[in-house]
Image 1: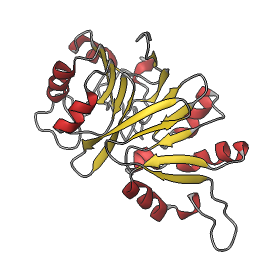
Image 2: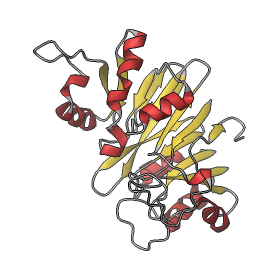
Image 3: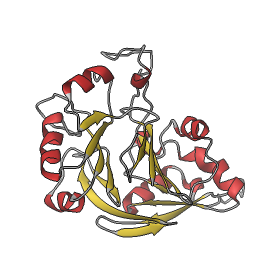
Length: 261
């Protein structure tokens, strides 16, 4: 199984609108960050995790014309506002594209954009997505990929974490309860939100101190940090972090069997 980091940025990206780089070196390509999303692939199955506002760029960069499912962590705008870009993927496959998330998330998206899931009364729009509710600590299989879910505390809401065998993905998480940590036991590779960086107080995203504590307990072979903001320069992060924890970057490809980049 292969994992591609489509984007590893915060909700504003790097640079943010207006060309604000913060502390990030604009000459380093690894500081150019789109919104956080990944692609999980086997030889026969393509799974997208989150549909950001950069989705068209992500799919075209990958030259990806087929998706077998879309997994949504939650309904915050930077994770779902690209859903409309899935329309040509569904149309060219001549089938509805399956979207998986918690019932509450799917219903909120339906409320915002009802044309995604059903035709409007005037018949102008044609639906192209199909809702598939999943809950915390549920197991499912899409194509030939097995998936397990777990709960994450994002302070303002709860989000879905996803585990694919020995690999796990955790974005928009401030804290993890004991059940979630147990669900993560045995992972070899973990991509985890660390947006709070060196802040002492954790509000909606984990800081380094909390991530280090989790890594010490779970002991994955490699941990990659995502949801990186304009204060988090790539080279500076590499200098600050131990070798088994690295910053992610847009375009990072991970072989989950060998942990080779």
